[in-house]
Length: 113
Length: 116
Image (cartoon, rainbow over all chains, first blue to last red; front, side, top):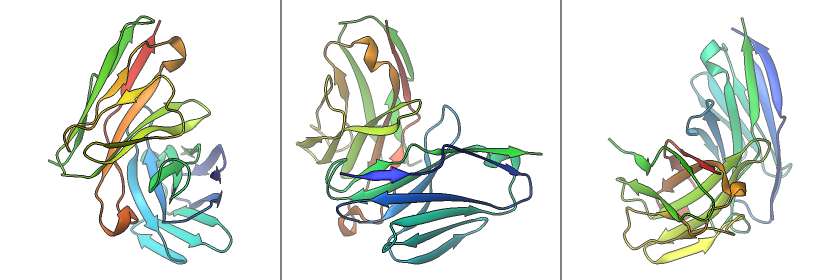
């Protein structure tokens, strides 16, 4: 099975930087995804990591360490519209369906002026 | 426009009255999946399908059925809905490519079901 942990809630200030951590324990690993979800809306894809290291995409970056079962999502130059839940999801071959995604419970990010 | 379409978006119904939530994707994706999302529990997979006529249980399949007769459609069926199935439901699809490792899932807009 899978166990994915991320903080329930975080607060940050507009213009600042925030790092959202995700740790996972899996019986197989075929990539880690980060999604953004605004309240009542569908999750939207942010980033994908399968090899160790940092993937940068504009204001958002994601890091992966497979040996540590650890990832983080880094958001820079925070804007009010970044207030949302951020979901960490791991794709593996056991639990959640073969090649399916298992999601963490999400981190609710609150941006303050 | 590439999209996953769910219907209905909202439904209030009563216990025991069979209902179907439709899901259709226009991206020729092999993989489709249903999730439910509940406060404090996150997204949990109900059923998934690797391709036409191939379906399998996810983490919370009890009380649900699915079918995959065509590649584009993946309906979710609640034969006898109960109040504990009140939830926000999402359909998702993704392409196969390289064992789907790097293919993100595309989500529909969600269906909010209330079972009274």
